[in-house]
Image 1 (cartoon, rainbow, N blue to C red):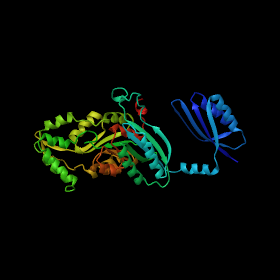
Image 2 (image 1 turned 90 degrees about the vertical axis):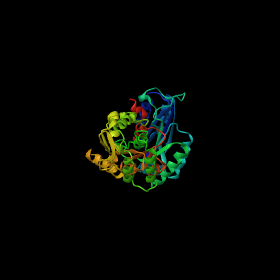
Image 3 (image 1 turned 180 degrees about the vertical axis):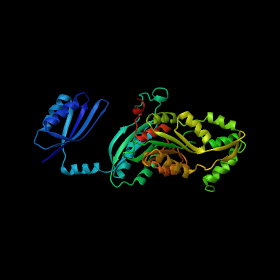
Image 4 (image 1 turned 60 degrees about the horizontal axis):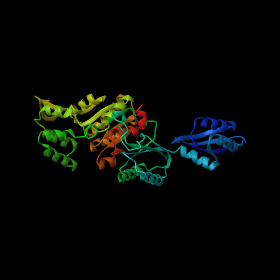
Length: 408
C-alpha cells in the first residue's frame, strides 16, 4: 500500500542541499509527486510530496541528512482523503491576481486574503515581479533601463465555481481604497503568448487630447469643450460630436500641427514599454480616434508597426475642418483589432488592447487582454483590467514579465 509523505525542510541555504536530500529520498525508494523550493534572504524553504511503495525508514534517513546539512526536516503523513482533495484542487481553474502600485501597503495583504477567502479561493503562490527597493528608498540608478516600474506582486489563486465579475468588482473597490491596482485574469496558455498590442493614442500614449490642444491654439477651446460636454451627456454620438468639433478647427494653420507634433508629451513608461515589446517580438499598432498626422509622428518616434486614425483634410496649408471617411470610432477600433489579428494569423486571445476612453471599451472587450489605462471610473468599471497607479510599462507585468527579465 502506498504511503504519501509531505517533506518540509527549512534552514540556512547552502549549495549541495538538494542533491543530498534527493539521495536520501532515492535510497528510500520514494517517488516524487510534487515539489516547491524558495530561498529568501538565504533561508531555504523546501516542500516535497513523495510516495513510498515499500517499507523504509524514510523519516530516520531524512533526520540524518538534516543533521548533516543544518536543516530542520519534518515528514508529515498525508492521508488518502487529503491527497484526493489536493488532486481535485490542482484541476480547478487558476486565476492570476496582480497587485500594482508605487509602493504596496502591508495592509493590502489582509484585505486580499479576506477577499479571496470570501470567494472560496486558495492562494497557491505569491511572488514579486518588480525589482528590489533600495534600502534608502531612493530611485534605483539612472537612465531609461534602470527606471523603476513600481511595485508588483503576483498571486496564483485556485477555486471552483468562481464568480469572476463579482470578484473583479470588489477588487476594483478595494484597490481604490488603498491606492493599489488589482488586476485579475484567468490563467491560460495565451498569457505569455500574446503577440499583438493595440493602443489608443490621446491620453494613453501621450499625456494630452490633441483635438483640445488644436482648439486652444485656434482660439476655440471653450466651444470645443462645450461640444464634448454635450457628447458626455448623451446628446451627441461620437461621430456627430467629432464632426462638430472638427468644423471649429477650420482655417487652422498647418504649421501649428507641426509644432504640436514635435512637442507631444509622451505618457510615462511608453518608451520603455515599446522598447521591450519590439525586443520581445510583439506587433504594435495605434488605433486612434485622433489624427494620423500625430499618430504617424509617434510611429516614427517609437517604432509602431502600423497606424490607423482619422485623416485631416488640409488644403493650401490650412485645416478645412473635415476628415476623410470613414471616421475611426469605437466600432471601427474593435473591427481593426480583429482584422489585424486575422491578417497576422493570430487568435483574439493573443491580442492586447490599451485605452482610456469610452470609445475604447469595444476594443478592450474584443482583445484577449483589455486594459483601461488611467481611465475615468465608468471605463475602469466596465473594463476587465485597469492600471491607474503606474506608468504604461506596467502592462509588461500583466503579461507576466519580471523587471529582471527586462534588464538582461
